[in-house]
Every structure is written in C-alpha cells, then in structure tokens.
Length: 539
Image (cartoon, rainbow, N blue to C red; front, side):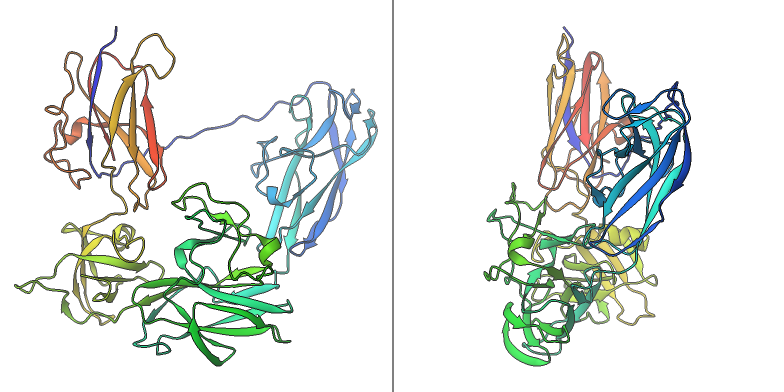
C-alpha cells in the first residue's frame, strides 16, 4: 500500500505555464485526384444579406465521386494556415445550411466520373451586426469518409461586408469610456448627452443600467446579468444615474423613459446626470415591444453570480443598443498627502472605481468622502513600497466590485498638475489574490489499483480579475508525514509573501494550472505520486 500525506499552504505569487500543440497535414487520398477549374466572384454583402459561393473542380483521378457513398468528396473547411482542414470555420457565424461544421458542401452532381467536373456551392448569411471587413473562407477537397485531402490547392473565397448596420445606434458607442464629475444636485454640471440614431419608426424606451450588468457579444448583440434568475436583465432603471432630458427638453429625472416617439429624422438625444458619487452606468435604448419597461432574456440564468450573461429576447424587445460606459466620479484630490493621519502621512484607502481607459480612479475612507485621481507616465507607482511600471500598477488596482466595498487599497501623494509627479502605492490588491480555503484529499481518482492521487479543491475569490491559478507542490521526503508543523504559510491566507512559510518558497514547483471563475469551486488532481509527504499551495 502506498502512503501519501499532504498539507496545504497558499500565497499570492504569480507564475504561469503554457502548452503548445502542433498538427500534421493529412495525406492525399490514394486513387483520388482533382484539378481546380474556376469559381464564382467574391461577394460584397451587407449585414443580414445572403450570398452563394461556387467553385468547380474536375475529377482527374481513377475513382468516381459518388454522393452518399464511401467515395463522396466534400469541400472541407480549412484553417487560415491552409494546411489544417476538416476543422470548424472562424466564420462559422456565416454558415447557412452547410454540409456540416467542418465541410461547406459536397459535389452538386451526384456522380462525378473521372474526366468530369462539378461545382461545389454553399451559402453564407451575414450576421445582423457583423463588423465591416473582409472575411475569407478557406477550403480544399477531401474524401468524405476519411477526411484525407484529394489534391491540396489552397482554395479560398472572400466576402466583404461593406455597409454597417444602421437600424439602431448610440453615440458614444459601447466601446467608449468617459468620465464626469457628479453634480451637486440633478440636473447640474454633470449632465451628458447621448445621440441615438435609428431607421425604425414608432417609439423607443430608454433606461440607465449598472455598467457591469451588460456585455456586447462578438456579433454586436448584447447579453445581460440575471442574478435573481427572473429571466429579465438585472438593474434596468435601478442605477443611480438619472435621465434628465430628451431631444433638448428637460424631463422629470428618472431612470426609465418609456414610449418616446421616434421623429422622422430618426435622430434623438438623451441626457443623463447623477449626484451620487462613484456611479458606473450605460444608457440602453430598445423598442420594448411587449411594453413591460424591462429587458427580457431568452434564457433564465442558472447561477446567481453573473458568470454567464444571457442574451436578450429580440422577439419581445425588438432592436436594442447600449451606450458607452459613463463614470460619475467625485471631485479631484488636491495637492499633498491624501487622507493623512495625525503625522501628516497618507493612509491606505479603498478604491471605489477605476477607469482603465482614461487612467482615473477614486479612493477614500467612504464612497461619500472619496476623491478622484488621474495618473500618467510622469507618476511613481508602487505595490507594497516596491516600484512597478504604470501597466503593472493599473493591472493591480482593483476597484470595489459594487462601487462600495471590496476594492484594493492605495496610499496617494497627489499632484493634480498634469506635469506634476504623484506617488501611488497599492497597499493591498484584491484582484489577484490566492484562495483562502484550499484543501487536499488523498484517494484513487484514476481508477487505479491504489490510492496514490491527491485532489486539490478551492474556491476562487469573488473579487478576482485573474481566473488562472497555479498549483505548486513541495516534496517533504519519502518517510515524512505532512502536517501543519512542516507545511504552513505561517500567516493568514491569502498572503503577499511566503517569507515566513514552511517549507521555503523555493521548495515549491508548479505542477499544473486550472482556470476558475470568481466565486466558483475549482479542482486539480495530481496523479500517481510516490510514497512520502507533500505540501501544496495555490497561487
């Protein structure tokens, strides 16, 4: 019987591991050969359009291509390297009745005898919100039954998307982040106006929403949080940001503005404002076809943490657009040590919001007393008194997830002059912490003959931006039993250093990694260990 003992330590250290894979091209099929003849023109399409590609190949081999038989020949999808075929297309969203997820089509003729030729044709449909650009469809002929390539020729055809969708849009758009200082009262100096353009008729509904509750998908559509699992977007009309004007006319401040008539020009303006510090919001415009002033979702969320966003229901809500991200920050900090103690030294204060696009954050004892700070390459950046680059500082300055609590803390000596030199020192970074509840169990996890495996289990910190965790192990010896005496961080986890830990940090080596979403459980199994004691940690 194999004896294995384990203990756990944790430390917030950064390591990584990469794995590379290489593939080999398929060999040409024996008895089969082909020759490219000609093809249809490349396509120029608009979002929502449908088009057809056709390419003609001659059978120059000795075997007939017979559809529905082992000698069926397909036009396979190939990767951009033109070597890897029988793969999914990077343009799979364009697929319209393709033969399969790895092939565009088979021959149009049911039998293509040696010396004959046939078209291979397939249809592409441009997604409704596809971005402008040229999209390439690579392919080659393969034997359908085996996937072997017939005669690699590097076929491709292009579809150019030339006209953007204009049905509904907001300026500034989703990708833009902007900052305003809060108003003393609403409406006030913090007002900001968005321009909405549409080719629709009828009415539109508008609402403010917490910025973290919505994401834009790769095809330009939007998905939303559903933490309370009611199949409706969270936080519609629950933001601290108010709508104060429509088309240049003041309206009673509110978070939702329903059924506003679309003018014949198709252009509308919506003005927002806030007197609440540290707000992060977006403006949503949608048709609201079912008139419930909510954003309905296609699927009820299966979790209450918003790890997975849910697509909105086009049938019930019609077209929808979401604005850029708006931060409402407090007033700017003044020159000198910020929030000093009795000796005049700056103190560690919580970070509430962080606009990484514009290098601005807010921090203070409370959200109500917090101040705004801009930073740039002139400034000095530190983490626990160790100087770091601007990029490292930015990556580790984690704001409170809800704008209220749970953010990094920072000491600031500030010079508001753009040409001045400020000093920012992160006291604690919460976005990249190690887990605090790591456990290990010895068992037979690979259905072998003995219990010689170790399974590590932990919960990822809920505020982490990082989702990759390294598993590290130190061997204590073949005759040593692991215990809290010889495997201990000797400080509360997560820690920022392993200087007091047992064994020494240099004894640990990374044996693997695992990706875990914030606030979710993760596991890693270390298989087939030799007799002895082992100490593990997750970083």
